[in-house]
Image (tube, rainbow, N blue to C red; front, side):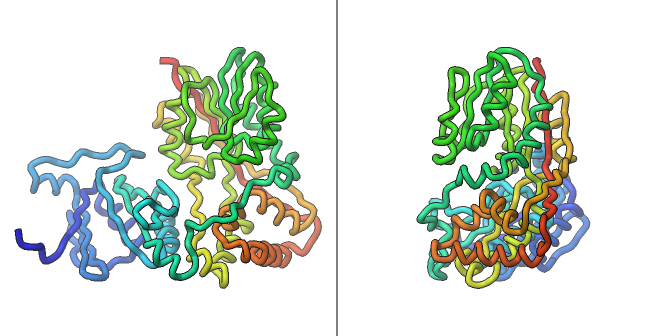
Amino acid sequence: MPPPRHVLTILAVRDLRLASRFYDRAFGWTKSVNETVYVEYELPGGQRVGLYDRVAFGRNTGRVPAAITEGELAPAELYLHVDQPEAAMRSLADAGARLLSGLEPRAWGDEAAYFADPDGNVIVVARELSSVRAAGASSAKREPPVEWDPDRYLRFEAERAAPFEETCQLVRPRAGMRVADLGCGAGDLTSRLAARLPDSEVLGLDSSPAMIERASRLAGPRLRFERRDLQTLEGRWDLVFAHASLQWVDDHPALLARLRDHLAPGGQLAAQIPANHGHFTHTALAELAGQPPFGEALASWVRVPPVLRPSEYAELLFRLGFESISVRLVVYPHVLKDADAVVEWMRGTGMLPYLERLPESLREPFIDGYREVLRARWPEKPVFFGFDRILLAGTRPVV
C-alpha cells in the first residue's frame, strides 16, 4: 500500500470532558477539533492525537470498546519522545496521571517513565539515552554506588520507632502467623515485630546489602532475613507488614493488588507510608537538583513520589476487596537538634535517589548546597520537623 500522509492516534474515553481537561493540563497541546463527542490535538511536527467518546466511537465500529476497570490498564500506549521528561512528568503528575514506573534507562536505549491517564491509557515520556550522555549526564551511570548507611539511618531510631509502634497496633496478633516484613532495614524493628507475635515465623526482606548484613545478626529460629527486592515476594502470608518502604515502589494501585494476592485468606496488610513529599525538605531537594551544575548532571531529573492521598488508599483497599479497612494520616512532631540534623535525616533516606544519580565529584557539593538551604530556612535551635505518614491496614476476606 502507498505510505500514509499522516498518522492520527485516537483513544476511546469514558468521559470526554474529563479526558480533555486532563490532556489540556498535562500537555497544553493545541486543539484542532473540539466537538461534543470528539477532541483532536495537533502536536509539534504534525502528529495528531484524538479523544473519542467511547459510545460514539462504537457507532463507527459497530461495537462499543470495553470499559477499563479503575486501576487497570487499557491496551493502548502513547510513547512520546521529549527533551525534558522530568518536566513532562511533573505536568502529568499535576494533571492527575498515575505513575506506573519512574524514569529509568530501558533496554532499547531510551530513558522512559510510564504513566496512566484517567482511562487507563499508558503514556510514556522518553528521551534517548544517547542525548543524555552527550550532555555528560547519563542517568544510567551510577558508579560508584550510593549505599544505604545503617548507622546514619539508626541515628533517628527513636523518631522512626513511634510510627512503627502505631502500625503494629493495627495488627491483630494470633499464634503461628507467617509474616513478611517488606523493607526490614537493619532488622531492629523486625525483631520487635517478631517479639509481638508469639510462635510466628517472620521473614525480613531488604534490597540493601549493608542493611541485611546488619539485620542478619538478629536472626533466630523464627526470624530470618533475606536480601531481596520487596516486589519479589512469593507465597501466601498471614501478615504483610511494611514500615516506610512502599514509597520507593511505583504504581501503588498495582502494588497493593499484588500484596493482596500474597495474603492467605484472613491475612492482614499493615503499612506505614511516609507522605512528607510536600514538605520543604523535599521541595528544596528538587529545587536544588534543578540548579547548575546539578541540573545538567541530573538532566533535570527529579523524583516523582508515587504516594497517594489517604482517601485514595481507603477507596483502593475497598476496591481490592479488603475488610476491616483503616487509613489515617498522622503528623509526627519530631524535634531535631538543628538544621544539620535534618540534613543527616535526609541523607539517610530522601536524598539518596539524587546522590546515586550524581557523579561522585558532585555529591559532596550537593550535600553542602542542601545544608546551606536548610540552615537558611531553620537558623534556630532546635528545629521542629513535622513528618506526615499514612498508616493503613486491611484484611483479606476468608472466603
